[in-house]
Amino acid sequence: MINKYFTQRTSVRSFSSKNVPEEIIEAIVSAAAKAPTCGNMQLYTIIETRKTDLKEKLAEQHFNQPAAATAPVILTICADFNRFSQWCEISDAAPGYNNFHSFIVALTDAVIMAQQITTIAEMEGLGTCYLGTVNYNAENISKLLELPDLVVPVASLAIGYIEKESEPTERLPLNAILHKEAYRHDSEEEIKALFKEKEDFPANKEFVQINKKPNLAHVFTEIRYPKEMNEAVSSSFLELLKKKGFA
Amino acid sequence: MINKYFTQRTSVRSFSSKNVPEEIIEAIVSAAAKAPTCGNMQLYTIIETRKTDLKEKLAEQHFNQPAAATAPVILTICADFNRFSQWCEISDAAPGYNNFHSFIVALTDAVIMAQQITTIAEMEGLGTCYLGTVNYNAENISKLLELPDLVVPVASLAIGYIEKESEPTERLPLNAILHKEAYRHDSEEEIKALFKEKEDFPANKEFVQINKKPNLAHVFTEIRYPKEMNEAVSSSFLELLKKKGFA
Image 1: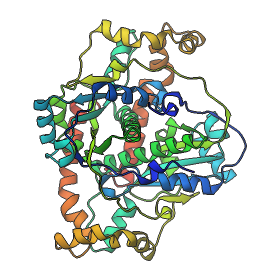
Image 2: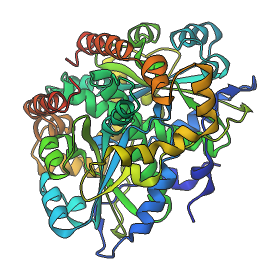
Image 3: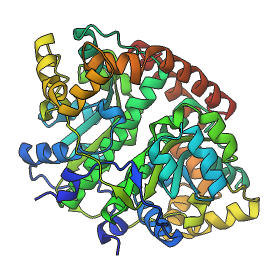
Image 4: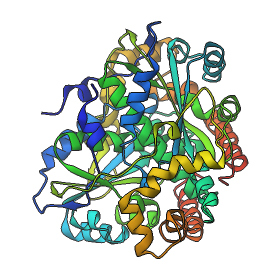
């Protein structure tokens, strides 16, 4: 009964050179704005990048990954308490949103919006891909997009017409992610069983082999998301939150 | 051309007593798991609360707001690096996810998942409502749901059959939230114009009157989201992040 789009979707990393008209992005964002938002404050701003020189500079900040390099449009979704705070000040009301909790609320609003844009764009036949690199160079991206205080980039979406569909990827079994009434504290054997299908997935096995690692977990901890990198991004991102007034 | 569901949806705060079968929640979560996720790590766990005594205790942590009190099911979506880190350890790979950046990545994954569940549930005819109060009592909620280290509740959804549809709410004009190529630094007059429709919206005018405030912004800064409250939640939530190992 559930619309097949949801069970069959995959992210797209290869876009055709065909342009996506501005009106289409506007229609998608306009519809997506009906997504849930905390207190109806709409604590996000979406920056649309399509000018060649700016897009090249932005793609560079995303390490020129194929999705960023080939997409005709990149949307940077920012957590934004600037517009709302300005409105409060104009209204002689004292805003109190320069704190960590307010950042988390705006981040949540922004990610809900990013996902709504993703769903609507994909249902309209476009391809999309989150650029998970948005946090890595968040300060450079902020400068490039001229973001003011209380505005921080938190999600980036490459959008375009699909050049090449991606292969479907595997997911954990449902009982790994859905727990009843309380968190289920699994044993080592149970955790092993939950990840078995992922470890046996052909593309993952190939990944292990190419990288000459003993198993898939090592690919994650040593190549894709190593501790030193996570700690470096923690520092730089926290620094940006302070600079932008969310400390 | 965009599916009318997206432009017409509203959150629901009044649920009928009709039960939502477990199989329906399972089908929704299973389909939603195909949503984008960072590195296909699925850094979330969803706790389903439906037993009366637990649901009452959980609703209490959400200040017994009508959506929490009347819904037959509450889903608490948690940012979860525990399962993935356990799997790394079992695999003799050293996980490096006890840091702030990893929390932000897991939070993003969890909110994407929450929004995908929302969309699928609503398209299936169910009503949903985010309980924005999840951060306020995050530590008590963590205890109630027996959350281990590296697991933090970040989004709560009340789900059920609709007793009473909500009135449609207003949104800011598109140019408030969509900026082209760079952040648009608006003047006071421009900000005023962007919020005019919101201030003129009948339900908001009524809200100002009932609360005897000079204007809508004062309702937000003095009643709904005051500075002292935001700062108190900042402290308690940061404290929880430390306790759970995401410091």
